[in-house]
Amino acid sequence: MTRGLYQSKAGTCIHADINGALNTLQKSRVVELDDNLTVKTPILLEVQKRKAVASRIA
Image (cartoon, rainbow, N blue to C red; front, side):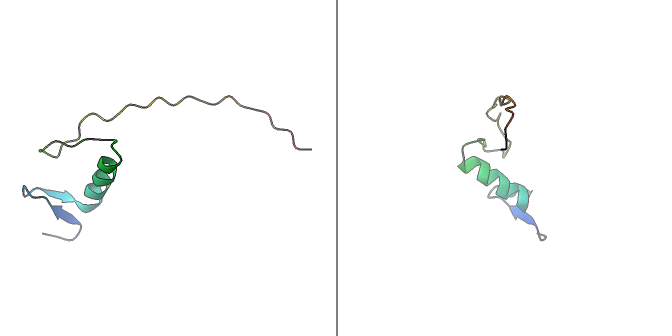
């Protein structure tokens, strides 16, 4: 085991930063993980552009 790696219960080595990011995403319910530590399809969000509004500074 080297610095920066996390070993899962199944014995798989994962980069610690990736593990932390996946845990954060999983807690926020953005992604779901299966038992093989593969990412399932995330939720697709559609972002709408805002109309430009001219502002007047007096």
